Image 1 (cartoon, rainbow, N blue to C red):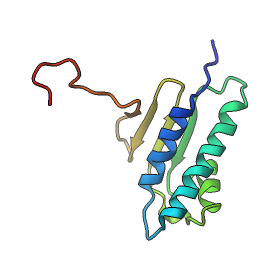
Image 2: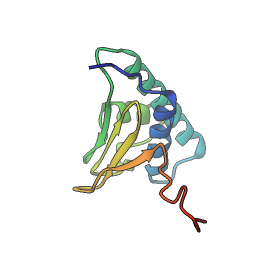
Image 3: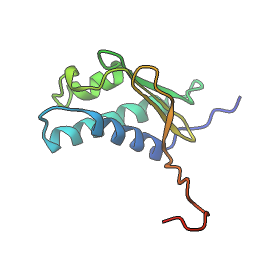
Image 4: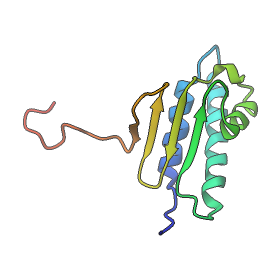
Length: 121
């Protein structure tokens, strides 16, 4: 099986998605630090190799290691992370199951369902 590198665009889309899902009274600088930390950690993991062609991020009742580390460095408590969320960061797409038993939804690249259809706004 061919090992395809996870592109920076997928990593940035994943970090942006998590940044928008964190709740609580946080400053923009905190959220930006979190995003920057997460991009750095994901990029490092993606560059390791060893057949890494999917990075999974999850938050059951507490964030996984990568999310927790990115949050700690930005002074974001683990209680501010959404529960029951799983993300798969792959070379060609980023998928999210946003809640217990929820279906996978592609969040990157954005699918335009009305492209090429007449009358689409």
